[in-house]
Image (tube, rainbow over all chains, first blue to last red; front, side):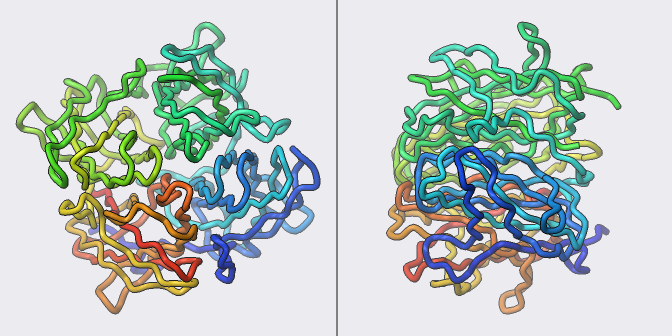
Length: 275
Length: 271
């Protein structure tokens, strides 16, 4: 007979950053706006003291009012003034308003931890990004939680990711997310977003390859991830893949390429690895 | 530490994808009727311990869809993942699911779907992973709870207005012990116009009617007037342990006085 921890409080979910008094299309906390483009804003406390030993964090993000932005969001841990980045540069892009993204991060975070969030964006004009956190005390299919997350491919200079240029009808050239990964990776998620200031997308399907290996000798480890440029919401779908069982040793060059089904737009890509 | 990527111990196969010819499934003959199976691979070349599915409702607006994944020889297919729910408001819609499901090597893998409209288009991509995440073991069954094949949707949830929880909607009862739960939400069938942009907060609960206990609180999901659809499409799989014969319910609140209903289906991973 299996154990059923819900019946014994061994499995629980806790919410933080939810705002129930705002009737303007949101139930999340508005983060502190940066003072300049592509510069990190101040930390804003989301979790004063974590009530459980979390084995995963679910980060809800929402951009409610303006369009045509990309964001890099940091989740920090530590006391006020002493925050350390726990999850760096979560990539979120907004084609049209009222767009929600969710990152599921299988990270071990001790009870009583204080969690904060900050962000940067390419354009702070009328900016408005919101966030909430669900802490999860439980793991997926018996996996261990991970203690570190490494972000690969984020570009803080333009608050985006590494740009790949798909070719209509065939795979384009590889773009390296990193020349040499700094840590072992046991699982990963991949985020896609608009590239540069391109917030008017063609309605085009893409097949994205993720590869490892030196330039001109890449080996595809995840073939033909289906991505779609959506001309209504002017953003890419999916914004984030599920957590994937992809293992990559430290020191690997990681690269991506893509093909398009019709007129192609550039795509930014970031990989989040866990170890 | 072994690095199976370098020893062919970890492999991924994309089925029905690539070459700019992602697979369009055979269209059903009518509304709310399953179509014929479309083959994604004649013989899986690796043993599968995980499956990622991408659903793309591509060209026809205002539809809901239920997609089945099956295995087995022609005319003897068996459903292994039933009624994956997706919707299309005013634009194309990608939805990804990942299930740690075991599929034997050499299996023939197929897909089919139904829609609440007689005219519809569904593209499916499927990736099989030969190895799960460290120390993981795959499940052998996916149990679908809450799908409504009579309208190609899910169980309707009516949110409460202005930050007040609505009544619980019963999705169904588990028949096996469940260890993980995936969630799909979509427009309620026939309702493809969002009058007011709003955010919902979902509660998923277990227990009998009137004595529900929330196990996953306040999942946040906007609905947008721009897309006329539920904006959150990338729910992760949730770690849960739910015994067999447990009732699963869902309720929601809206940030607005004028609420938009939605449909929900959950998928339980079982041994």
